[in-house]
Length: 358
Image (tube, rainbow, N blue to C red; front, top):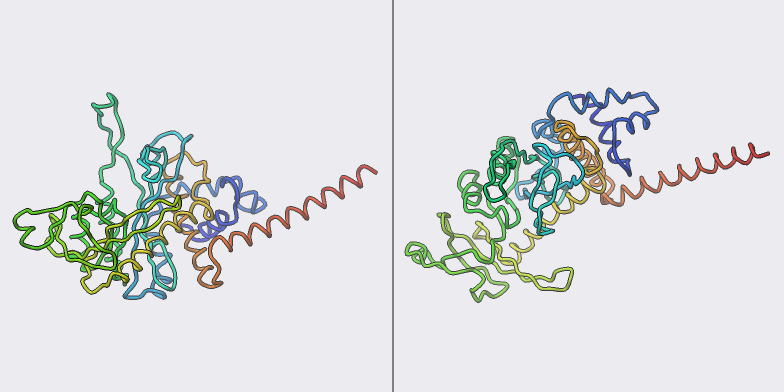
């Protein structure tokens, strides 16, 4: 990988306010960097989490702490007008409650009081084709489930010897297999919500005799942590019920479970609240790092643009840690400067027009 070109391309993504293209970067450098050279850079090889780790490792080593959090979640970069391929496909968007066409990106974000750095990422690839009898046509599927990708990402983080204590994720990754993987295979703790229809046992004896109850039917009080057991999870979990208000004024409930028996109710809810930073990461990727602004149509180019956007986010976060400004404030400063330059250029053009009219 050409590090100098990566730095230049990622700076272009941070400074751009429209579609990002090889031609656009060439124009920005006043032709010093050719369109073809940018295209070759984006097509030369597959930029993976391995390359991301090489670039972020010094920063992680500088800021890592033993009580840090790894939050894992996915987001869909919508591509409604792009031709389908192994990464541009149809995925269920839980926020919209329907399938959307785009690229499904899974990320692991390192979070502590010093900053938030993307540790690794995985793009869902639907490389297999099967016949869907229900729909009467062929469709693409991934050879790996998202939960398998989730575990592989955590395995790589452990292999890289990153210091952290907790894994946080939303309800879609709250499988028994993931819980066991984190606690037993990795030796880490987790906090995650479970579905309201999840069945739990209130004692080890109830678990042995198969006496399970639906979690939403329990009369659980807030500010209380109770010991519970889940099917296919050999160790006890600790459950906390958290009520909250949605933006539309409706009330919601989260049933949070943790493997850490030392946490109080307040600690469980406050720690889980930090998971929201991965949503901020997704928003900043799209709004500030040009994730969705590439018209690329080739799988490798699309994937490498995503890599560069994640690297651009990392650079923006480093600036944020240094300046104490959030990503959107930094981007606003760039925008304000761009407006001033554009205004000055317009005044010069107006002056030329006035002189020509004479």
